[in-house]
Length: 117
Ligand SMILES: [Zn+2]
Image (cartoon, rainbow, N blue to C red):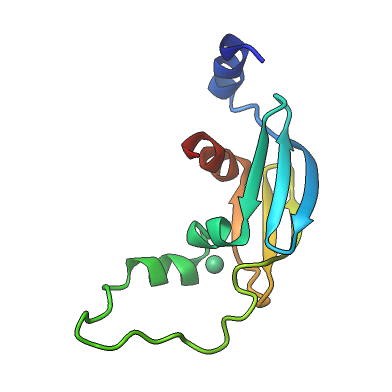
């Protein structure tokens, strides 16, 4: 894959997934139309989940450092990927193992994770 071609496609915003393969319960391998392969993890996706609930959680003030850390109940499966369904032709809806499915991950967002890695 030439760098020029990649830059070209990027300028047009023309990246879209052509393959989706489950590696394990928390890992999906995405193949893009330019041949790039990207591993998506449940944790990685959850960290950038664009839904209102998750955005709010991320902007909440950090917990009081003087309080003992707690592990909130009901988060089993939160970091696993139960399903990924296409939304229109621009995004995927991700269902996490705990049933959370309100996040719509645009191709742009998914691709930006690959560029960051
Ligand atoms: Zn969310």
